[in-house]
Length: 192
Ligand SMILES: [Zn+2]
Image (cartoon, rainbow, N blue to C red; front, side, top):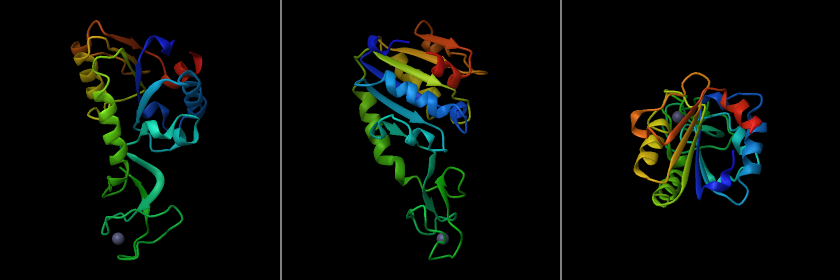
């Protein structure tokens, strides 16, 4: 894999990376290949391992949340709490991690980075773009799978590489512009 053939690289990280022992190694491998590259990463992982890697935190958005902040499970107060806080002062319920597994997920935290990501994508329209999708299932297709196919279909110079152990198939929308690789994406990255 040579990223230097592309002007910009959009990376989607999916469930295959979540709670995977080799994930940090794979993230750091990507970081070493992406030095001085124009990239953006959308991650569906909530384990936050990516934020401990060498990848640029200003180029990562995690729309499903993580374990960096806490919230009231009922979101009775719309605010987020530091990780060392334990109880919601209003309803006295125990705080939970601010991610999609909370009963009432408060989505405020990632929104500024999502806006930055949208703007970044809009600037890739006439550029040589690689969309690299790693281990993304059909659980939240509206966050990575569908938009990545759409972005690639709208850009004549774009290319999609989809790596997935079980679901590498490509839609008609990207026919001729996509490559499907049926491999575990974490192991694939470690090996490139
Ligand atoms: Zn509460």
